[in-house]
Image 1 (cartoon, helix red, strand yellow):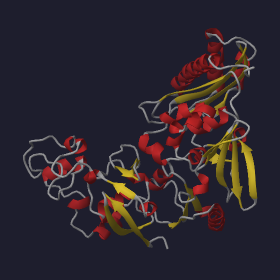
Image 2 (cartoon, one colour; image 1 turned 90 degrees about the vertical axis):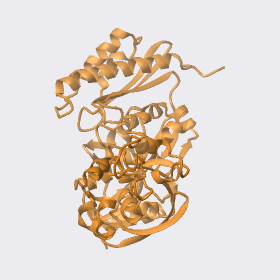
Image 3 (cartoon, helix red, strand yellow; image 1 turned 120 degrees about the horizontal axis):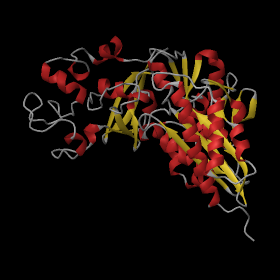
Image 4 (spheres, one colour; image 1 turned 60 degrees about the vertical axis):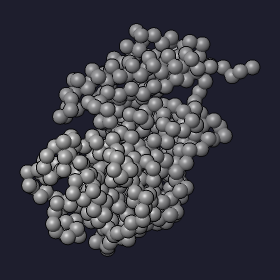
Length: 444
């Protein structure tokens, strides 16, 4: 069953195309090897470099982080579809310097076949190295079958209702895994950190993707809501401003266009932004399984690295956020080596002021432990007093005293501890400043 080829029909660069692929083929594999469109680059092949970017239903995504079977019926634009024939698009012009001699014909990046030549193939092309991809003379099916696909084999199901998904997950047992946005899960497959027998895709269940106002002033967000919607939705900005501020710091645009809110929270990466946002804002997580529905407070949901309170067969369906209190300000601050990288340290903070006095504080740190780390001792320093630089500095010192970060190839523990105090101080000061601009009493 894992080697079954799935028929795929879609619109590519304005024209109908069709082909077939195993479930484990990525969209990048399919586009290059089945459709022969080699302008889609193969760079890192696990979502870091962005060289494989395409437009999927009008949104930029990284094709190495999308399964080919997921795009049946979709509209796809690759780099070959840019421009208007004779006139090169700016993307084409930026690929290869013009006027270079040799087989690239004066630097035209479309090469011999009227297609852009991937940058990482330019050197091989000039040096006569056949490389792989369209320079590999083997039949396309043989190329895929001889090690060009990094993902392990698995069976694939794409249910259209939540009960179907729960049933498939339950029947599949511990060897069945859910696929939401795939921006973390597919790299795990590529590196063989995950080897499921069955992948249950949630992307065709419309009831899991929504942003909805609650009657009590709170907000409900479906687990399959794309992360980019947190940036774009006015309702999120009004009722969950901390999430809106944190969202642009999650990966890059292509990642946010495909990644989901529930997927990030259920994945429970201790360096991820949304688990800390859920914890800092007192969110409640709604999960459903064969035994029915239950709710889990965010403070009880995160157990350890990549481990949550979800029981086998349960699906995270909804995130419910309470109405923001009057006089509440929030802020999210993180520091990473490069924009889009995981945070070396980050802080999600909320501060509520009443008549200039702090009545409530929440501070949650990321990248510093096995889970998002709440720091109630920092809140105790601020509660019941005016929030000024001195008190905030004292609260930040509590952060450095509580956390126990480890050292890795990105930063030493001592650096992370000092950095944690810095981002905590910045987040608390920013949240307090915004709280002062928020009405503290109901009008009239």
